[in-house]
Amino acid sequence: MNDCIFCKIASGVIPSPKLYEDDKIFIIKDIEPKAKLHYLCIPKIHFALLTEMDEVKAELVKHCFQVIPTLEEQLGLQEGYRMIINQGKNGGQTVPHLHIHLLGGEVLGDF
Ligand code: 5GP
Ligand code: ZN
Image 1 (cartoon, rainbow, N blue to C red):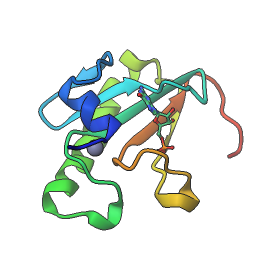
Image 2 (cartoon, helix red, strand yellow):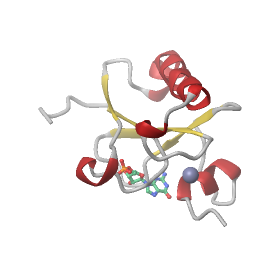
Image 3 (cartoon, rainbow, N blue to C red):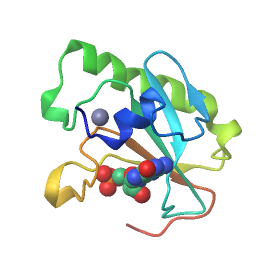
């Protein structure tokens, strides 16, 4: 059984309102926002690290980068935002299912 929280949200086992969804990815609000606006863009296929990349996963990540800019206004990110992908222990990754943080809604600090 897959215990991954983002897989469970992807499949609907754990309900979480999806601000965007298609057959490859979805976007939700982060449950513990680190900025005024904090979203997570999540591929539906489970993989943790960019080192696991293959053609299929690369398509998913590419798709994220194609979709996100089309949603800037809808998500309130039109004034700019920061994208973060945490990787592994030193990167502070707490959920081992690849995701892109989108932080905005205010001027962010240096780091
Ligand atoms: P990481 O630390 O792995 O880069 O980011 C994981 C993020 O997922 C954290 O910012 C955390 O707040 C968020 N998160 C963890 N569990 C849930 C959840 O059940 N729902 C939502 N919406 N976000 C979650
Ligand atoms: Zn997963």
